[in-house]
Length: 566
Image 1 (cartoon, rainbow, N blue to C red):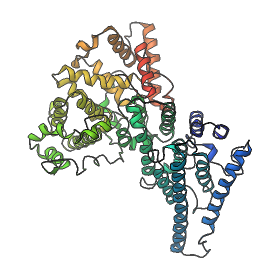
Image 2: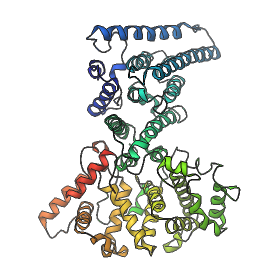
Image 3: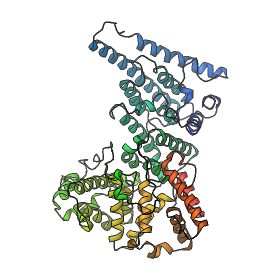
Image 4: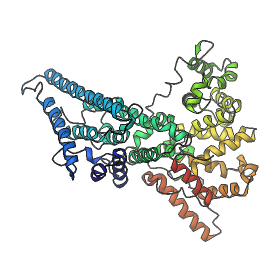
């Protein structure tokens, strides 16, 4: 990465991104991310400068970073016999001074970008070097300046949020390297920090990156620079999946909110995460009783604010907030007219907003509504256990039926996607939403609904690995259990290529009959591949998810590019 960042004279953006891409691909330890090594060292052990121009460029930057560290260290020095209150005040003064320096550097960067970005004279490398040097130099034994100090990390996170790609697009590649820096990202995500001190800051930064990519990926506008940034972001997610899966488990909701439906592999990458201390049951085990697994009764830890969008006072019905109507109906099952009005409330209020987001429907509002209703359903079943069909005669299922039956295909697709986003590792949310999806398939009288449920599941299975455990469990149950009569539906044989695709997916999800030893051997090998995929998600971007045939490869390639021809 050092040579990549300093040898390229034609494009500073490409050089910095290449450093991030190569570094994250070759190193999968907890301290390895897509960080730029070119920005992580001080002047003594930084990248080797091979030209006079680079020497002139970086020498002043290194001097400024050392001056900042010197001023921060000498201001308000702590006395040996100082009280605890005096030490705390001294630390606060130093952090405030550092935050002031960082803010001024961000302002200078923004002004430089505004003045020079149009004619291509803006160079992001000096600023990458400055912030990288500060991150590296703060990693000292002094607890005041240790980069794992929550106040210091928060100061850097605030400045990086100010410089997000939506505000400073010319700094986007260097920004990606900085937020995944080995002296920054791992320290924010260590378990000893409270969410408000660490992981929430990184959630905001990752949402900033995905939000910037969203319109390009949604419209399939994959220019070389956007494609490179997409691949780099994908590899940052891969590092998180390998080293910090709990982060993806806890913030999956807010991350999926800003990922367009066409980016199926990226969404699968997030939803495939499971805690380090959990061992996933093999989804291909014959006669696996999912409801008897001990993990299936445990609630997942979700730190995203799932009700933030639903509670927005902008969304009202009869001058009453929407979330109040939802809470009242889930508690009393009244008024019944609410279900008829609900699909209309999920549309955007203005045509301009619909055009800007690429959809007539408010997808974040749908995601918030679906998960809020589902959480209420899980709590209701826990407090009042029922058996058989009675457990599905509830206000929550009334809402799901109203959404699926009362919306057009586009809105129904977003609702089913929101349900499928909860099919993750074994927990009570995964079990509940899996049962909801299967129950909607079983009870629906519309063939279009059954076909769309199949599409939502299938399109997530024919892209590159990894595949979420709950997704596999749900699809295996759908095609194995004769009560769903899946293979009798005509859309499974609509065309020869569609029939071959379904058969290919079925072979990858179901072991073949034991009567044929050769087939059994091949099936066991295929099952082991899929099992290893779920138990070792870090190998996910390498290959296709155990699917044979040209249909699987073509769909996987489309998913890897970030746009799926559906």
